Amino acid sequence: MIVMEHYRKFASLGVACLLATSQAAMAAQWQICQMRVEITGVTKPVPQLQAKVRQVTPKQADAECPQVGDTITFDPETPDYQNNVPRKRWPKIGQTVRMRYQYLDGFCHHEEGQDAPCRIKHYPLDAS
Image 1 (cartoon, rainbow, N blue to C red):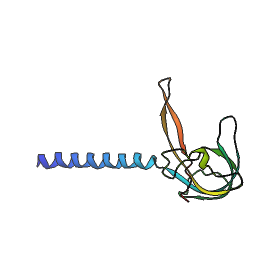
Image 2 (image 1 turned 120 degrees about the vertical axis):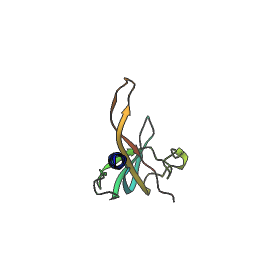
Image 3 (image 1 turned 45 degrees about the horizontal axis):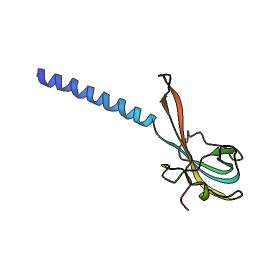
Image 4 (image 1 turned 180 degrees about the vertical axis):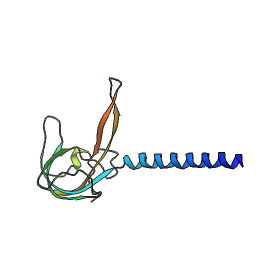
């Protein structure tokens, strides 16, 4: 009987830990905004694309997406968001492209040795 009582306590602890970790995992999800944007320019001296947002569809109800009409500045990335698109393959001014804005809120480690809230952002172009 004593063994069974310890087993129940251990099982309850395991369930509590599982619930806690699943909540933490849910808190760190990519928020995704599908967008259609019109390329309006390239910034200088650091080249980045500028675009006017023409259409936005959030994947999650609570995603913080740019609004239609907003101008965004970004480094275009490959669809898997692992690499930047080479400049010679950037969309041209006046071209309309489909892309994602995706972000992950979390804590980043800074050089001063302290963690602080940060948002990791990616701007992958959709495969054409």
